[in-house]
Length: 160
Ligand code: SAM
Image (cartoon, rainbow, N blue to C red):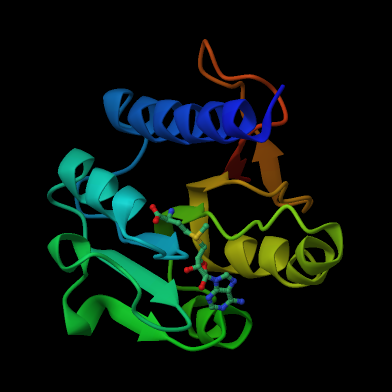
């Protein structure tokens, strides 16, 4: 599979899982969502379209998003997510989506020293995590993937 094919499969998996969460009403209409890694803002735009009543708090080092999908200032948290996400521990977050994998194993290994436990700490019991990197944590129970999502492309959990 070419890198282009792999990228498309990963993006389709991301969208399928986020749509599945919305279509199955897996989070409350007033639950807070964390979008971990704004990037260009394409996924942020999709999440706000799918979850119009939920507040979406967005993280990145700096704003690099298209103006059409840049979050309002009060919902943007800039800096190293390793540090900035810590303030959400115990905040009963409904859904956390993290797209901060790089495909560089050594960089992703560093991210995985803090991301799984930080997401688990932020989520409410029953809260949902959707991630491009595997979140191995005893509090995060892997959920069955929606039809059409290839295992290993994207990851889906509920906090127990
Ligand atoms: N889903 C996004 C979109 O639709 O455009 C793409 C996200 S992009 C793959 C990942 C983003 O996460 C980058 O903008 C990068 O700056 C940010 N990021 C990755 N690790 C980070 C960290 N530790 N702290 C802050 N930002 C980080």
